[in-house]
Structures are given as structure tokens and as C-alpha cells.
Amino acid sequence: MEIDPRQLRHLLAVSRAGSFSKAAETLHISQPALSASIARLEDVVGIRLVERGRHGARLNAAGEILTRHARSIETVLATARWEAASHDRGIAGPLSIGGTPLATASIIPRAVAALTGEGRYTIEIVEGVDEELIARLLRHELDVVISNIGLTDGRPEVTAIPLFHARVVVVVRPGHPLATRRQVSLSDLADALWVLPPEGGAFRMQVEALFTTSGRPFPTNLVQAAPFSVLKELVRQSDAVTVLSDQIVGSELRDGLLVAIPLREKVAPRMFGIHLLRDRQLSPLASRFIDVTRQLAPSFEIRR
Image (cartoon, rainbow, N blue to C red; front, side, top):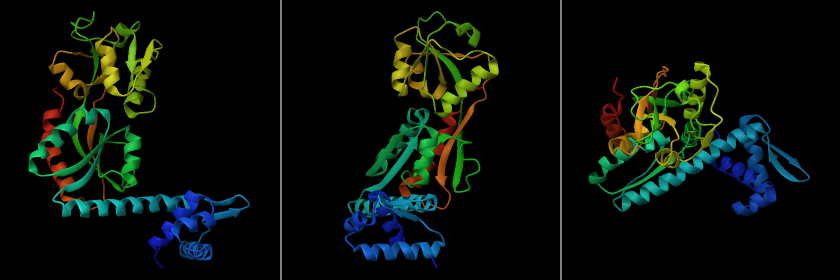
């Protein structure tokens, strides 16, 4: 016997309300009808999902797993309604694109701009750290994610399409004492004020690994800044240094607002790519965005 999506909706209501009575009120059904629905769901999956007590109802671990899928279904249905209504008005979409700061500062705006002459669209761009974006992709809250490839290894439900490599360089302002150097090492920067992204993201972990493998202590003369626009502006207006990927400061380098200096320490370039849910059928707009992004990818590849 298959799970009835209505029963998942009822379980989600119990999770949100914290009691059968409040959930039943929200669903506009009787409490006995709600209890019977949850009981049938437990019969189908063969395990208990809800623990009742004096203080209400609480989902156990198995119940939380099912509510995660219930939330995904809820999101998919809302998107379906939105897409149908938009199509009726001659608007393609919605398309929700997630990207790390590197992606939102480089390839995503270029790809979206390339689409603007092809019709009327509803597109949302969301910036975040890799793990957060992949979690939202799995919940069907995002259609496409452009971020580091490698984080989804071991997840058969996610497909990754490689796009380009990102190289780490030291970034300073024009006129900085190091700005004319052809190369610098971490030892040259021992006394520098550093500006780095906060802990937790994949790029920050790569920076931490860089210091560890080089045998250098992590900077204590440090400003942690997010978003990246703030980080770059701090570097531009002071003698602070940072390490970033070429692509994230591409426009500032072209305009002469920042200077990039290669690191003497060898840092493996990161591969960036598109992440998709393997079994999710994409809208024509999402498919077109992917095609355009792949066409643009060679122009973002690092120069060797």
C-alpha cells in the first residue's frame, strides 16, 4: 500500500501544531478523523510516528523523516500552482537559482542576463553557503544550485554538472605595499590584517586547510565579514588582505579596484558546477538556464 499524500499533510500539521486538537482545527477536520488518518499512515509504513503525552504530540525520528518529505511535496505543489498561473499570463517560471557568493558574483548574473531578451520570466536568485543550498535543493525549494562540486558525493539523488575551476589568490587594494609583487607566500602575510568569511562555509574551510597544510598559524589579526561585498570593500579601503577566487573579484580586478597576487603555496583549484535533483523534471526555463550557463562556463575557467 502506498502513502497517501493527504496523510503526510496531516502529519505535517501535527508537527507544526504540536497537538492533534490544534492540527485538526487548522485542517478543518475533526480530531477523531485526524487520529484515524495518522493511524492509517503508521499502518502503511509499519512503524509508530507520533508520541502522545500530557503536553501534546511529538513526532519521533521516523515521523520527522516523513515530514521532511511532506514539506517537499508542499513546496512542489505551491510551485506547480505558481508556474501554471504564470504560464497563463505569458510568463515563464518561476525559476529558483541558488549559488554561493562566487557563483552569484560571476556566472549566474551573466546567465540570467543572457535570458532577458528571450521573453518574460519570474526568476529568484538565492545566495548561501554550499551545505545550506544543497539542503534547499533537496527540499525542492531551489531548482538549480551552482556551488562546489564534491559536496554531493555519495548523494545518488543529486546530479552534478562541472562548469569551471576557481583558483585562490591573495587580494589587496591598489597601492598596498604588496600590490606590485608577482607572488606572495603566507609567511609574507604573517603580520597582516586579514579579512575572511565567517566559519562554516566550504570556502572558509578551504582557507583553514591552506594554513594547516602550510604549517602556518591561522590569523589572529582578523576581521570576519559577510557578505562578500562587505569583505571586498574592507580590503579596498584598508591595508587588509584576503584570499578569494579570481572569479569573485573579476569585475573589481578589471576596473582596477583590487589587485590579485598569486600564492606561492600550491592550492588545488575548486571545481564549480550545477547541482540538480536527478529525478526532477525541469521546466523549459530551468533547462534553458542550464544550457546558457554551460555555454558561458569556458569564459570563467582560470588561466593556467
